[in-house]
Each structure stands twice: as C-alpha cells, then as structure tokens.
Length: 174
Image 1 (tube, rainbow, N blue to C red):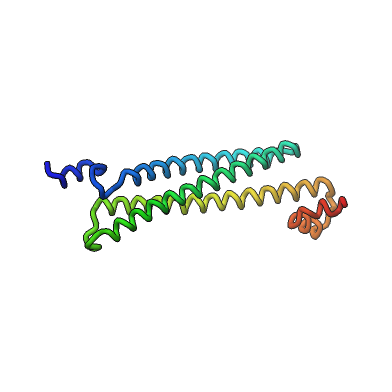
Image 2: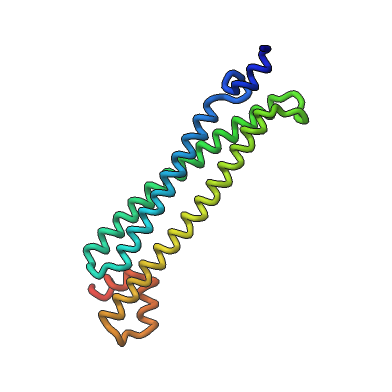
C-alpha cells in the first residue's frame, strides 16, 4: 500500500488534517451539549421562579439563573474561540496550497466541519439571546404582578416608571 492510499485509509496519518482539529471538533461538540443542558437548567429555574410567591426563593432562583447565564456566556466564548482557531488553521492550509483549484478532499471535509460548527454556534447564540429575553420578560412580569398585589389601584404610569427604573423603589424610601 502506497503512502497516498494509507492517508486515505487513516486521515490522522496525513499532515493535511491535524489531529488538533478533530480534538477541537469533539471539544466543541461536548461544550455545545453542556450549553444546551445549561439552557434546560435555566428554563427549569425560570419556571420555578414564575411559580414562586416567596420573595427569598425568587431571589435565590434569580441568583442561580445569573450564575448559569455567566457560565454559559463563558462556554459560548470558549466555543467561539476554538472554532476561530480551527478556521484560522483551515485558512492557513488553503493559503499554503499551491493550486487553489485543487483542494485536498480532507481539507474540504475539515472546512465543511468548521462551517457546520460555526452554524451550530450561531443557532446556539440565537437560542441563548431568546432565552435571555424570556428571562427579562419574566422578571418584568413578576415585578408588575407584585406591584399590583401591593397596590391594586396603582396607576399605569407609576408601574411603567417602576418597571423601567427599579431604582424608583430606593428613591421613594430616602
């Protein structure tokens, strides 16, 4: 069996596809799974927050949600950096190729893999942004409900002012 045939049978035997990119691909896929699990944890915490009438429990849930958001933000950043490194590697290998019309099949596979990971990251960030909007709306709705329980006759303007500027609570107590 010649060298080229061996490379086709075992892609890791070739310099065209460094193992680092396959390792990074697997690392990215594991992180994506962890992030999605984090989304589910946040959704569960948010459901508990919405159903709770205990202020201490709500504050505890909000703190746990914030910690999860911070963790997920860091993981998304790490995934983005890793995919960026993979893309730089692909770009460098394409530039090193003497004939751009004749790109190695394995390099095409790697390039397609990186593109697919970039698309998954985009969808993940989109889902994360939607989740953050849902969280803010839930906090806002809970605040409005609490204001209405405290004072059923409260004016809409006061509700809007308090919701848009929570510091109003502190200003009134000074």
